[in-house]
Picture 1 (cartoon, rainbow, N blue to C red):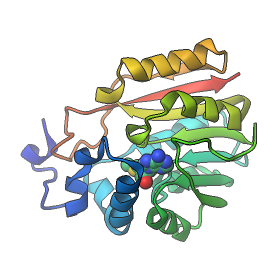
Picture 2: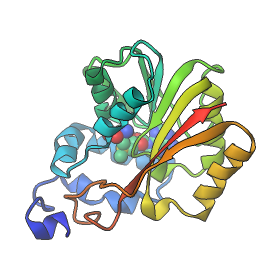
Picture 3: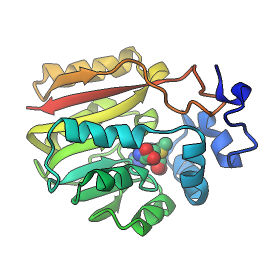
Picture 4: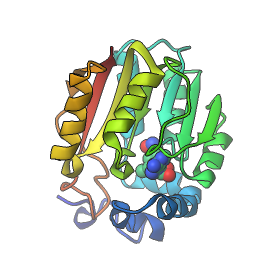
Amino acid sequence: MTGASNGNSSKADISATATDLTSMTNADANTLADYYDKWAQSYDADLPKMGYDAPKRAAEIMREQGVAFDAPILDAGCGTGLTGLELAKAGYTDITGIDLSLESLQTAEDKEVYRHLKKRDMNKTLAFGDNGFAAVQCIGTLTYVRETRQLFSEFCRVVKPGGIVCFTQRTDLYDDAFIKAIQATTRAKKWDLISHSDPMPYLPNHEDFGDRKHIFYDVFRVK
Ligand SMILES: C[S@@+](CC[C@H](N)C(=O)[O-])C[C@H]1O[C@@H](n2cnc3c(N)ncnc32)[C@H](O)[C@@H]1O
């Protein structure tokens, strides 16, 4: 089923920016920042209409993995803060968010759930010290990261040994190159896989995603 043909939602229900989402898959950093700056005002209204529940699931994973409520968590690609909001609702109190889009970071700040918010490009080094976080989550964002292997190494560097890395990736982008980046990080003894989910709904009510593009949730323990 697709949401639109099922009457769950349609292009008319969501903002014009949201309908263009798939065209951004291969966009460069400036184009992405502009796109998400423009979307920042209506993103929080659009995403629930599209059936997006990944922020809630990610917060559940942090709890399931026993990440302490006062432990520092990095929300990598925090956007407007839907992910931080769910972490805060789950009880987390020390959340740092990073994103490319300044307008999204401003919207995230208005939610008053982040301790720190910083503009960062995840295709570059993260500019945090070693072992400073108990966990990192990266939800709905790896779509746009080209330097996946470098980013996975960076996640393992900024998260302390024994900590958690949780990310989602679209099933259609979980390709050979992506798997090789995961395997290289494992071979380098930087993390071990805890769980790889079945394909899960991503944006079930967006007509370009519907039942065609799902996401995996992957969880790793840093060594
Ligand atoms: C679909 S949104 C997801 C936001 C949030 N995690 C959520 O689940 O609602 C993708 C986010 O990735 C950010 N982004 C894209 N490329 C990035 C990069 N190279 N570095 C940091 N953030 C990036 C965008 O600005 C956008 O806020």
